[in-house]
Image (cartoon, rainbow, N blue to C red; front, top):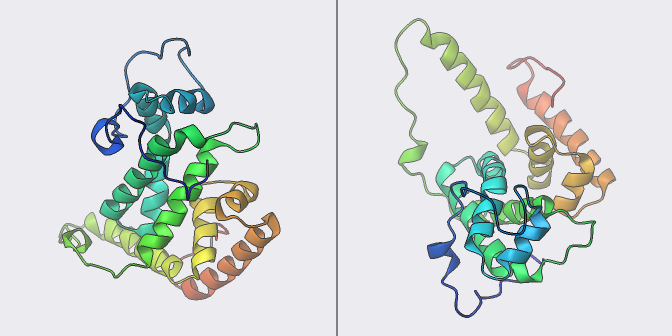
Length: 219
């Protein structure tokens, strides 16, 4: 399924945004597919306009896609819009999916999410209310919490300052725990290119965070 192809919903079906929300896990099983149908089987049903199959596929994959988008964008509202757009492409483009035993749906979906996140990051930024931190709790136990939050903030800032492809490689391989091969497919790069990006990113992060956070070897 080419992510650039966005066919319109088939005649006789309503728009995906109105009839195929990605939240919630559908009850029961799909007739003829058993209790745990595979992604390819669900996509075949979605291509026929099956909303329950779409809901099941979305419940299976949207949460991880949401976590990925939030890590790349750092904004829950923007991440939600990205995942909605990605799932809309699944709904409208399912008929173009050709199972060949090589490409996994989850890899394709994450590639779409990454590309949508990159496009959104290039838009002019808007500082909404979500970006305003809550006042700290002035109790002694809040000191450690604030210290951890500050450390996490510094790491996030250092990650955000990396070149785009290095940041995406780190996000996929360390936060999403994907292999270099999976990350290479998602980013349309070779495995060696991903490994090179990770090596440069680790050096840059260590330099930025030297003396601020303890080097655990994770970056």
